Amino acid sequence: MQISHGQKQQLPTWKPGFLDIHHINTGRGDATFMVFPDGTTMLVDAGDMSETHPRTTSSRNAALVPNKSRTAPEWIVDYIDQYSPKKQERKLDYALITHYHDDHFGEIDSLRKISEGGYQLTGIMEVGDLIPIKKLIDRGFDYPIDLKDEKVQSQEEFVRDKYEMIPSLKEYWKFIEYQSEKVGLENEALQVGSSNQIILQYHPKDYPKFWVQNIASNGNIWTGFDNSFYPLFKEDEYPGENPLSNAIRIDYGKFNYYTGGDISGINSFGQMNINDVESHVAPVVGPVDVATLNHHGNRDSQNPFYVRTVRPRVWIQQNWTADHPGEEVLRRITSKKLYPGDRDIFSTIMLQGAKEVIGDRLDQYKSQKGHIVVRVYDNGDTYDIYVLDDTSEEREIISKHGPYKAR
Image (cartoon, rainbow, N blue to C red; front, side):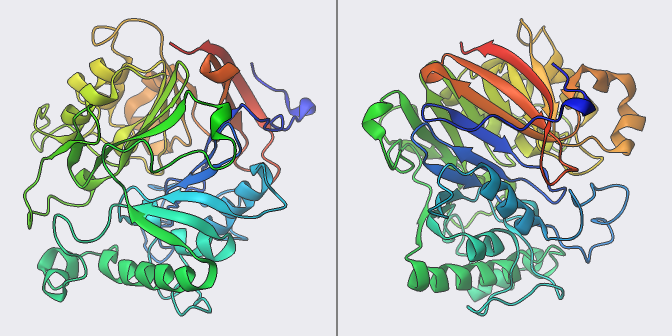
Protein backbone atom coordinates (compact mmCIF):
# COMPACT_ATOMS: atom_id res chain seq x y z
CA MET A 1 0.00 0.00 0.00
CA GLN A 2 1.50 3.32 -1.09
CA ILE A 3 0.75 6.43 0.97
CA SER A 4 0.05 9.57 -1.06
CA HIS A 5 1.89 12.79 -0.20
CA GLY A 6 -1.40 14.38 0.84
CA GLN A 7 -1.97 11.69 3.46
CA LYS A 8 1.08 12.01 5.69
CA GLN A 9 0.78 9.34 8.35
CA GLN A 10 2.94 8.38 11.29
CA LEU A 11 3.80 4.83 12.25
CA PRO A 12 1.08 3.70 14.71
CA THR A 13 2.32 3.74 18.29
CA TRP A 14 4.01 0.60 19.61
CA LYS A 15 1.85 -1.43 21.99
CA PRO A 16 2.77 -4.19 24.46
CA GLY A 17 2.90 -7.46 22.53
CA PHE A 18 4.38 -5.85 19.39
CA LEU A 19 7.90 -6.73 18.26
CA ASP A 20 9.30 -3.77 16.32
CA ILE A 21 12.54 -3.99 14.32
CA HIS A 22 13.58 -0.61 12.85
CA HIS A 23 16.32 -0.67 10.21
CA ILE A 24 17.50 2.94 10.35
CA ASN A 25 19.06 4.61 7.33
CA THR A 26 21.53 7.41 8.06
CA GLY A 27 23.67 6.79 4.96
CA ARG A 28 26.67 6.06 7.22
CA GLY A 29 26.26 2.38 8.07
CA ASP A 30 24.06 -0.12 9.86
CA ALA A 31 21.82 0.68 12.81
CA THR A 32 18.81 -1.39 13.89
CA PHE A 33 16.61 -0.32 16.81
CA MET A 34 14.44 -3.06 18.33
CA VAL A 35 11.54 -2.91 20.75
CA PHE A 36 10.71 -6.31 22.21
CA PRO A 37 7.13 -7.29 23.19
CA ASP A 38 7.48 -6.13 26.81
CA GLY A 39 9.22 -2.84 25.93
CA THR A 40 12.82 -4.03 26.28
CA THR A 41 14.99 -2.10 23.82
CA MET A 42 18.11 -3.02 21.87
CA LEU A 43 20.26 -1.26 19.28
CA VAL A 44 22.25 -3.44 16.88
CA ASP A 45 25.23 -1.49 15.50
CA ALA A 46 25.73 2.26 15.09
CA GLY A 47 27.63 2.84 11.86
CA ASP A 48 29.42 6.16 11.48
CA MET A 49 31.87 6.39 8.59
CA SER A 50 34.18 9.39 8.63
CA GLU A 51 33.24 12.49 6.66
CA THR A 52 36.96 13.00 5.97
CA HIS A 53 37.13 10.11 3.48
CA PRO A 54 36.63 11.16 -0.17
CA ARG A 55 34.74 7.91 -0.74
CA THR A 56 32.23 8.70 2.02
CA THR A 57 31.17 11.97 0.41
CA SER A 58 31.43 10.76 -3.21
CA SER A 59 28.54 9.68 -5.44
CA ARG A 60 29.68 6.10 -4.83
CA ASN A 61 28.34 6.32 -1.26
CA ALA A 62 25.03 7.40 0.20
CA ALA A 63 24.41 10.91 1.50
CA LEU A 64 23.99 11.58 5.21
CA VAL A 65 20.22 11.70 5.83
CA PRO A 66 17.91 13.34 6.57
CA ASN A 67 20.42 16.20 6.44
CA LYS A 68 23.83 17.32 7.69
CA SER A 69 22.59 19.27 10.70
CA ARG A 70 23.48 16.32 12.95
CA THR A 71 25.92 13.44 12.95
CA ALA A 72 24.81 9.90 12.08
CA PRO A 73 24.76 8.87 15.79
CA GLU A 74 22.72 11.96 16.65
CA TRP A 75 20.18 10.95 14.00
CA ILE A 76 20.11 7.42 15.42
CA VAL A 77 19.36 8.86 18.86
CA ASP A 78 16.70 11.16 17.42
CA TYR A 79 15.08 8.13 15.81
CA ILE A 80 15.20 6.16 19.07
CA ASP A 81 13.67 9.11 20.93
CA GLN A 82 10.75 9.11 18.47
CA TYR A 83 9.97 5.39 18.73
CA SER A 84 11.15 4.34 22.20
CA PRO A 85 8.26 2.99 24.31
CA LYS A 86 9.76 4.40 27.54
CA LYS A 87 10.32 8.07 26.79
CA GLN A 88 10.20 8.99 30.46
CA GLU A 89 13.12 6.63 31.18
CA ARG A 90 15.63 7.45 28.44
CA LYS A 91 17.94 4.45 28.06
CA LEU A 92 18.81 1.42 25.97
CA ASP A 93 18.53 -1.93 27.69
CA TYR A 94 20.97 -3.50 25.24
CA ALA A 95 23.35 -2.48 22.48
CA LEU A 96 24.94 -5.16 20.30
CA ILE A 97 27.96 -4.43 18.11
CA THR A 98 28.40 -7.10 15.43
CA HIS A 99 32.08 -6.32 14.70
CA TYR A 100 34.66 -3.54 14.70
CA HIS A 101 34.25 -1.85 11.33
CA ASP A 102 33.42 1.83 10.90
CA ASP A 103 30.02 1.22 9.27
CA HIS A 104 29.00 -0.83 12.32
CA PHE A 105 30.54 0.82 15.40
CA GLY A 106 32.12 4.13 14.33
CA GLU A 107 35.43 5.66 13.30
CA ILE A 108 37.56 8.39 14.80
CA ASP A 109 38.92 11.33 12.83
CA SER A 110 40.13 14.90 13.30
CA LEU A 111 36.59 16.31 13.18
CA ARG A 112 35.14 14.35 16.09
CA LYS A 113 34.18 16.09 19.31
CA ILE A 114 35.75 14.95 22.58
CA SER A 115 33.44 13.79 25.35
CA GLU A 116 33.81 14.71 29.02
CA GLY A 117 35.15 11.17 29.42
CA GLY A 118 38.04 12.00 27.09
CA TYR A 119 37.05 9.77 24.16
CA GLN A 120 36.09 10.84 20.65
CA LEU A 121 32.38 10.85 19.88
CA THR A 122 31.64 8.51 17.00
CA GLY A 123 29.27 5.61 16.39
CA ILE A 124 28.20 3.69 19.47
CA MET A 125 30.36 5.95 21.66
CA GLU A 126 28.30 8.99 20.67
CA VAL A 127 25.01 7.10 20.95
CA GLY A 128 25.99 5.89 24.43
CA ASP A 129 27.06 9.39 25.43
CA LEU A 130 23.56 10.65 24.61
CA ILE A 131 21.49 7.68 25.82
CA PRO A 132 22.73 5.49 28.71
CA ILE A 133 23.23 1.86 27.71
CA LYS A 134 22.55 -0.77 30.36
CA LYS A 135 24.40 -3.67 28.68
CA LEU A 136 26.78 -3.43 25.73
CA ILE A 137 27.55 -6.70 23.97
CA ASP A 138 30.33 -7.08 21.41
CA ARG A 139 32.63 -9.87 20.21
CA GLY A 140 35.22 -9.24 22.95
CA PHE A 141 38.81 -8.35 22.17
CA ASP A 142 41.03 -11.33 22.98
CA TYR A 143 40.01 -14.06 20.50
CA PRO A 144 41.18 -15.26 18.06
CA ILE A 145 43.87 -12.58 18.57
CA ASP A 146 44.31 -10.14 21.45
CA LEU A 147 43.51 -6.72 20.00
CA LYS A 148 44.91 -5.01 23.10
CA ASP A 149 48.33 -6.59 22.56
CA GLU A 150 50.73 -3.93 21.25
CA LYS A 151 52.49 -6.53 19.10
CA VAL A 152 49.19 -7.34 17.43
CA GLN A 153 48.39 -3.65 16.97
CA SER A 154 51.73 -3.14 15.24
CA GLN A 155 50.98 -5.77 12.60
CA GLU A 156 51.00 -4.37 9.09
CA GLU A 157 47.32 -4.98 8.36
CA PHE A 158 46.31 -2.80 11.31
CA VAL A 159 48.96 -0.12 10.80
CA ARG A 160 47.90 0.29 7.16
CA ASP A 161 44.18 0.14 7.94
CA LYS A 162 42.83 3.37 6.45
CA TYR A 163 39.61 3.06 8.45
CA GLU A 164 41.41 3.45 11.81
CA MET A 165 40.16 0.24 13.44
CA ILE A 166 42.72 0.06 16.28
CA PRO A 167 42.64 3.82 17.08
CA SER A 168 38.83 3.66 17.06
CA LEU A 169 38.90 0.61 19.33
CA LYS A 170 41.11 2.46 21.81
CA GLU A 171 38.45 5.20 22.02
CA TYR A 172 35.77 2.51 22.38
CA TRP A 173 37.58 0.96 25.32
CA LYS A 174 37.88 4.42 26.96
CA PHE A 175 34.14 4.84 26.43
CA ILE A 176 33.38 1.51 28.11
CA GLU A 177 35.60 2.30 31.10
CA TYR A 178 34.12 5.76 31.60
CA GLN A 179 30.48 4.73 31.10
CA SER A 180 30.93 1.76 33.43
CA GLU A 181 31.92 4.16 36.20
CA LYS A 182 29.42 6.89 35.29
CA VAL A 183 26.17 4.97 34.62
CA GLY A 184 27.03 1.35 35.42
CA LEU A 185 27.38 0.18 31.83
CA GLU A 186 27.94 -3.58 31.65
CA ASN A 187 30.13 -4.88 28.82
CA GLU A 188 30.11 -8.53 27.74
CA ALA A 189 31.18 -10.62 24.79
CA LEU A 190 28.39 -12.46 22.97
CA GLN A 191 27.98 -15.93 24.46
CA VAL A 192 27.57 -18.32 21.55
CA GLY A 193 24.73 -20.80 22.07
CA SER A 194 23.05 -18.79 24.81
CA SER A 195 19.39 -17.80 24.73
CA ASN A 196 19.65 -16.22 28.17
CA GLN A 197 22.08 -13.36 27.55
CA ILE A 198 19.63 -11.04 25.79
CA ILE A 199 16.32 -11.41 27.62
CA LEU A 200 13.09 -9.54 28.26
CA GLN A 201 13.66 -7.08 31.10
CA TYR A 202 10.13 -6.13 32.19
CA HIS A 203 7.45 -8.79 31.72
CA PRO A 204 9.17 -11.97 30.53
CA LYS A 205 6.43 -14.28 31.85
CA ASP A 206 3.90 -12.58 29.56
CA TYR A 207 5.83 -13.66 26.45
CA PRO A 208 7.19 -17.19 27.00
CA LYS A 209 7.58 -17.77 23.25
CA PHE A 210 10.01 -14.88 22.77
CA TRP A 211 13.77 -15.32 22.93
CA VAL A 212 17.02 -14.25 21.31
CA GLN A 213 19.31 -17.09 20.26
CA ASN A 214 23.02 -16.35 19.92
CA ILE A 215 24.24 -18.11 16.78
CA ALA A 216 27.87 -17.12 16.12
CA SER A 217 30.72 -14.90 17.27
CA ASN A 218 34.44 -14.84 16.48
CA GLY A 219 33.95 -17.77 14.11
CA ASN A 220 32.52 -19.89 16.94
CA ILE A 221 29.32 -21.53 15.68
CA TRP A 222 26.43 -22.82 17.80
CA THR A 223 25.89 -26.56 17.33
CA GLY A 224 22.12 -26.25 17.77
CA PHE A 225 22.29 -28.08 21.11
CA ASP A 226 22.50 -26.58 24.59
CA ASN A 227 25.19 -23.85 24.76
CA SER A 228 27.77 -25.85 22.83
CA PHE A 229 29.71 -24.49 19.87
CA TYR A 230 32.69 -25.28 17.67
CA PRO A 231 35.44 -22.98 16.31
CA LEU A 232 36.17 -22.28 12.66
CA PHE A 233 39.44 -20.45 13.35
CA LYS A 234 42.48 -21.29 15.38
CA GLU A 235 43.76 -19.11 18.19
CA ASP A 236 46.21 -16.47 16.87
CA GLU A 237 44.63 -16.81 13.39
CA TYR A 238 42.95 -13.55 12.28
CA PRO A 239 40.71 -14.07 9.22
CA GLY A 240 39.75 -10.39 9.00
CA GLU A 241 36.98 -8.66 10.92
CA ASN A 242 33.92 -9.69 8.89
CA PRO A 243 34.01 -13.46 9.57
CA LEU A 244 34.15 -12.72 13.30
CA SER A 245 30.76 -10.94 13.25
CA ASN A 246 28.14 -11.64 15.89
CA ALA A 247 25.00 -13.34 14.56
CA ILE A 248 21.65 -13.77 16.31
CA ARG A 249 18.17 -15.14 15.61
CA ILE A 250 15.06 -13.65 17.24
CA ASP A 251 12.12 -15.99 17.80
CA TYR A 252 8.61 -14.82 18.68
CA GLY A 253 6.07 -17.62 18.40
CA LYS A 254 6.09 -18.71 14.75
CA PHE A 255 8.08 -15.65 13.67
CA ASN A 256 11.86 -15.80 13.15
CA TYR A 257 14.31 -13.01 12.29
CA TYR A 258 18.02 -13.38 11.55
CA THR A 259 20.86 -10.86 11.34
CA GLY A 260 24.56 -11.69 11.05
CA GLY A 261 26.69 -8.61 10.47
CA ASP A 262 29.20 -9.01 7.64
CA ILE A 263 29.67 -12.76 7.44
CA SER A 264 30.10 -14.18 3.95
CA GLY A 265 30.06 -17.46 2.03
CA ILE A 266 31.70 -16.80 -1.35
CA ASN A 267 35.45 -17.15 -1.78
CA SER A 268 37.87 -14.84 -3.59
CA PHE A 269 37.28 -16.68 -6.87
CA GLY A 270 33.53 -16.14 -6.75
CA GLN A 271 32.87 -19.77 -5.79
CA MET A 272 30.61 -20.98 -3.01
CA ASN A 273 32.67 -21.68 0.11
CA ILE A 274 31.19 -24.50 2.16
CA ASN A 275 33.82 -23.80 4.84
CA ASP A 276 32.90 -20.14 5.26
CA VAL A 277 30.76 -18.75 8.07
CA GLU A 278 27.49 -18.56 6.10
CA SER A 279 27.60 -22.26 5.32
CA HIS A 280 28.12 -23.12 8.99
CA VAL A 281 25.45 -20.85 10.47
CA ALA A 282 22.77 -21.75 7.90
CA PRO A 283 21.82 -25.17 9.37
CA VAL A 284 21.42 -23.82 12.91
CA VAL A 285 19.59 -20.68 11.80
CA GLY A 286 17.17 -22.69 9.66
CA PRO A 287 14.25 -21.21 7.70
CA VAL A 288 13.23 -17.72 8.87
CA ASP A 289 10.54 -15.20 8.02
CA VAL A 290 12.85 -12.17 7.76
CA ALA A 291 16.61 -12.00 7.23
CA THR A 292 18.96 -9.09 6.73
CA LEU A 293 21.42 -9.55 3.88
CA ASN A 294 24.83 -10.56 5.18
CA HIS A 295 27.54 -7.97 4.43
CA HIS A 296 24.96 -5.54 3.00
CA GLY A 297 24.46 -7.80 -0.04
CA ASN A 298 28.11 -7.57 -1.06
CA ARG A 299 29.08 -10.02 -3.79
CA ASP A 300 30.91 -12.28 -1.31
CA SER A 301 27.68 -13.13 0.52
CA GLN A 302 24.43 -15.10 0.34
CA ASN A 303 25.89 -18.30 -1.09
CA PRO A 304 23.46 -20.80 -2.66
CA PHE A 305 23.51 -23.22 0.28
CA TYR A 306 22.82 -20.41 2.74
CA VAL A 307 19.99 -18.96 0.62
CA ARG A 308 18.37 -22.37 0.13
CA THR A 309 18.57 -23.10 3.86
CA VAL A 310 17.32 -19.84 5.45
CA ARG A 311 14.80 -19.14 2.60
CA PRO A 312 13.22 -15.99 4.11
CA ARG A 313 9.89 -14.56 3.01
CA VAL A 314 11.43 -11.07 3.39
CA TRP A 315 15.02 -9.96 2.71
CA ILE A 316 16.18 -6.62 4.14
CA GLN A 317 19.27 -4.92 2.72
CA GLN A 318 21.05 -2.33 4.86
CA ASN A 319 23.47 -0.66 2.49
CA TRP A 320 25.27 2.60 1.79
CA THR A 321 27.28 2.16 -1.42
CA ALA A 322 26.85 1.46 -5.11
CA ASP A 323 28.73 -1.83 -4.53
CA HIS A 324 25.56 -3.20 -2.91
CA PRO A 325 23.96 -5.44 -3.99
CA GLY A 326 26.19 -7.59 -6.13
CA GLU A 327 24.12 -8.58 -9.18
CA GLU A 328 24.94 -12.24 -8.58
CA VAL A 329 23.64 -11.87 -5.01
CA LEU A 330 20.36 -10.52 -6.36
CA ARG A 331 20.15 -13.49 -8.74
CA ARG A 332 20.61 -15.92 -5.86
CA ILE A 333 18.14 -14.40 -3.41
CA THR A 334 15.43 -14.13 -6.09
CA SER A 335 16.02 -17.61 -7.56
CA LYS A 336 13.04 -19.93 -7.19
CA LYS A 337 15.34 -22.79 -8.14
CA LEU A 338 17.11 -22.23 -4.82
CA TYR A 339 13.83 -22.07 -2.93
CA PRO A 340 10.19 -21.85 -4.08
CA GLY A 341 7.57 -19.32 -3.14
CA ASP A 342 7.27 -15.56 -2.91
CA ARG A 343 9.89 -13.32 -1.36
CA ASP A 344 9.93 -9.54 -0.96
CA ILE A 345 13.12 -7.45 -0.87
CA PHE A 346 13.53 -4.06 0.78
CA SER A 347 16.60 -1.80 0.76
CA THR A 348 17.43 1.26 2.85
CA ILE A 349 19.00 2.96 -0.21
CA MET A 350 19.84 2.15 -3.81
CA LEU A 351 22.66 4.20 -5.32
CA GLN A 352 22.63 5.40 -8.91
CA GLY A 353 25.75 3.39 -9.71
CA ALA A 354 24.00 0.15 -8.80
CA LYS A 355 20.97 1.16 -10.86
CA GLU A 356 23.12 1.83 -13.91
CA VAL A 357 24.93 -1.51 -13.65
CA ILE A 358 22.06 -3.81 -12.64
CA GLY A 359 19.23 -2.03 -14.43
CA ASP A 360 15.62 -3.16 -14.29
CA ARG A 361 16.44 -6.30 -12.29
CA LEU A 362 16.25 -3.93 -9.32
CA ASP A 363 12.53 -3.54 -10.01
CA GLN A 364 12.14 -6.74 -7.99
CA TYR A 365 12.66 -4.68 -4.82
CA LYS A 366 9.47 -3.61 -3.03
CA SER A 367 11.28 -0.50 -1.83
CA GLN A 368 14.70 1.00 -2.56
CA LYS A 369 14.83 3.87 -0.07
CA GLY A 370 13.81 4.58 3.51
CA HIS A 371 13.81 3.24 7.06
CA ILE A 372 12.41 -0.31 7.07
CA VAL A 373 10.25 -1.34 10.04
CA VAL A 374 9.19 -4.91 10.72
CA ARG A 375 6.22 -4.95 13.11
CA VAL A 376 5.17 -8.35 14.46
CA TYR A 377 1.75 -8.95 16.03
CA ASP A 378 -0.40 -11.66 17.62
CA ASN A 379 2.35 -13.39 19.59
CA GLY A 380 4.34 -13.84 16.41
CA ASP A 381 1.59 -15.01 14.04
CA THR A 382 1.55 -12.03 11.64
CA TYR A 383 3.68 -9.05 10.67
CA ASP A 384 3.74 -5.96 8.47
CA ILE A 385 6.58 -4.06 6.82
CA TYR A 386 6.50 -0.26 6.92
CA VAL A 387 8.82 1.97 4.87
CA LEU A 388 9.37 5.41 6.44
CA ASP A 389 10.65 8.57 4.80
CA ASP A 390 14.36 8.96 5.60
CA THR A 391 14.51 12.48 4.14
CA SER A 392 12.06 13.79 6.75
CA GLU A 393 12.72 14.42 10.42
CA GLU A 394 9.12 13.31 11.07
CA ARG A 395 9.66 9.97 9.26
CA GLU A 396 6.19 9.62 7.75
CA ILE A 397 5.02 6.33 6.24
CA ILE A 398 5.84 5.95 2.53
CA SER A 399 4.35 2.48 2.11
CA LYS A 400 2.97 -0.46 4.05
CA HIS A 401 3.32 -4.11 3.02
CA GLY A 402 1.48 -7.13 4.38
CA PRO A 403 -0.01 -8.58 6.38
CA TYR A 404 2.41 -11.50 6.17
CA LYS A 405 1.73 -14.77 7.98
CA ALA A 406 4.63 -16.09 10.02
CA ARG A 407 5.61 -19.56 8.92
